[in-house]
Image (cartoon, rainbow, N blue to C red; front, side, top):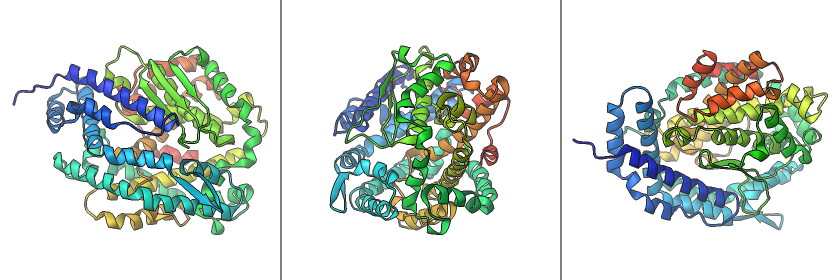
Length: 495
């Protein structure tokens, strides 16, 4: 069959679509508008995501020569499939976002926005009140939002099969070009290797920071534990943006001189509690959105999203759209973790924030990271089951709660079995990014020293790889920079 799709014209329109969507997500989740008007955007670009477009892009991929031609075809196919599913579930996605923005919880006679409740929970010193806030949040999730999550998940699974893949999981694995089972074996070995020492690593930190032992720990206590208010003195609010600017300046980057970077740090009632970067036009228009929780959370969030922002803001504008906007997001997540990790670095804490004695904080940071790594390893194991198409969705809440409870060591609520899942196996991107960042950070330290972040030459190295966008995946990029293979096993030494 002759191929009729003009790939260049397709890519041009796809860039317009992606930019419009990112702008709409920015305006809504930054709290500038209550509506999420993605329906009209899909309608304007309906031809991008037709079944025939998906089928032709699959054929193009099968015929593409290895190298950039194969990469461009695969990245466009991944976008087309995501758009095909997004168009089919746009009503539910819109309803989810708008309901989240409008909903409120009530705790002891006081009402507050649903989206802000997680921030309140993270700042609440009373364990019983934390539990009450979480119960109220979960009740809203179960009654108001979960029915929509179920619709989206079921429809996504059906569409993957309709498009010719055996399951949603098989589809994601092919589009990502990542062996998810092999990654799960690596993260499974991490779970096994850290199981024996997990409790002893966490117990002293729990007692120091929130005054309870492991046996008394509830899931509702974890946000307050991660918030770690006892370390607020290390992370004064007035130093948040100056510390970020000074760090970038050490790498030879003038944040205020970057006309393509827009900082959004204002508090708004409907603003998402999750920080995010919105690359509306790469590299010409990139938004960095930060809500305020307080203390280390704000610094970690700003530096993480700042890593995304600098990556996108430094991409070579002459690259094809596919390499500027699309590709393996383990790459941009890796750069985000690279800057975030500075907030847990002895040398950075001393030189930038003036923290002379950081041993207690670093011990907490290791324990906190161990919880996150074990949680995400369990999430990958669960999502492989969720998306395999072998078991009914009704079995998933129990399976999810079982995996997460075993990994983290607390009774995990089954209600979040779908809201805790990002589309397209993004959990794999996070896990690969943690390993990628660890390899890359070690290479920078070996070349420039413990204060690598204060060397313009280190910034030159980063800018040289940032310019590539995501043309290469994390495995290829790491091999080019360090001659190493991406291996999650490096995370054992981290914790």
